[in-house]
Amino acid sequence: MANAAAQRVVLVTGGNSGIGFECARTLAGRGLGVVIASRDRHASASAVAAIRRETGNDAVSEMGLDLGSFDSVRAFAREAATRALPLHAVVCNAGLQVSRPVRSADGYELTFAVNHLGHFLLVNLLVRTLLAHAPARIVVVASGVHDPALTTGMPKPQIADLDTLATTGGPRPDAFSGPLAYVNSKLCNLWFTYELGRRLATAGLSTDAHPLSVNAFEPGLVPGSGLARDYPAALRFVWNSVLPAVARLATRVLPTVNPADKAGAALANVVLDPALERASGKYFPSHARWREAASSEASYDTQRAAALWGASVRMTRLTPEESPLVSRGESA
Amino acid sequence: MRYAMRMADKYELFDEAVDLVADGALDSAVAKYRQALTLDDDFADAWQGLALAYNDLGRFPEAIEAGKKLCEITPDDVLAHTTLSRIYQAAGMIADAEAEGGKARILDWKRQLKEGE
Image 1 (cartoon, each protein chain N blue to C red):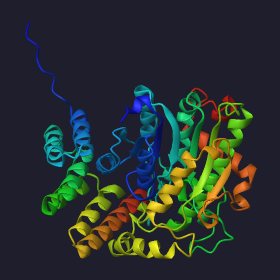
Image 2: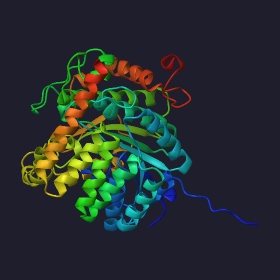
Image 3: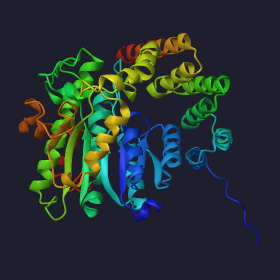
Image 4: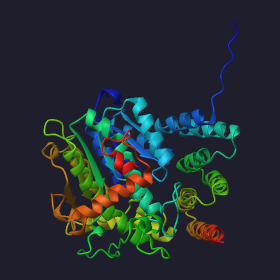
């Protein structure tokens, strides 16, 4: 199998388990180079070994990335540049939900920091590399829980000011709810996806001849995914060991319940499908069997999306030298 | 002329260990993680890798010891406690896995109370 440097490479954050792993496995099986990025490098290396063994594709590797640390994200981008990876796609898949308030290395609420800020910074730092290898793609893994019109068993998003969101995950400075922080971060994923697409187009960086598409993917409920990693052990056992088998049966009648391999293959398809090369600013949810559909009304709020972008630039201290999508005024 | 051989630092050894895992050589990876730890006994990433390597090998007592050491070094880290809890779970020690999760939460509350003082 060809070396990673000689072929198209896809970066999958959180690619060592759940749908990220299944996505990486599918991409490797189609002959693409894959880099799995995660803080847990041993788990990533185990995933690499399993994928290499199954697909015979040696162009699968891992790199350390802690999305909860801006220093780590910047170090990752420098390492990617050093390795001159021919990066054609980034799959922003890593995500977590915590049961108690935890701060990131930079002092932000961990769910918001990992699910939104870390990916915001990572993508901005890699945009020039992606543009150099266009046609290229960015796929952001969102969630149906961002949509208050859907009954998901999760709270509805509540976002007041962005500084409170960044420090508590919710709308109140004196309260914390893990599920609410998660739901809010998933709405941020969509604001980020759509704002990024608009900025790439407005700046003339993504063109018909050299498109860099940005889309959001919604996997549905995927038992066995890493989201339960902070749950109590008994609940985690049910989530990881019992429910995947249930999902395999339920998915036949319920499109929003999916085993990890099915959702991961669908995620890989958003990276691979030639018909989607120029499709940008789209949403591919499980309830539509991963065909294009509308996300929630709130997710199309361009003012809030722009405000989140500005706040994220300020929080990550992103500069115009680091990203062509940031202006002097924004980073000041 | 004589050349002194440069000693690999702990990060290089850790990288080599992870590469060995990717190559499916878990026993060699264990040795390499151990080598990194001889240079820095508080190297949390190496304890994390060592704990999971033992876990992958089914050597649960050693995995648990390494996981406990990891939690000692980084008591407020979600990943550390999750790792130990995962090992307990793999070893079939569900009650210990629950207790570890509860302990992690108490530790975190204590830290937050201290920060709020």
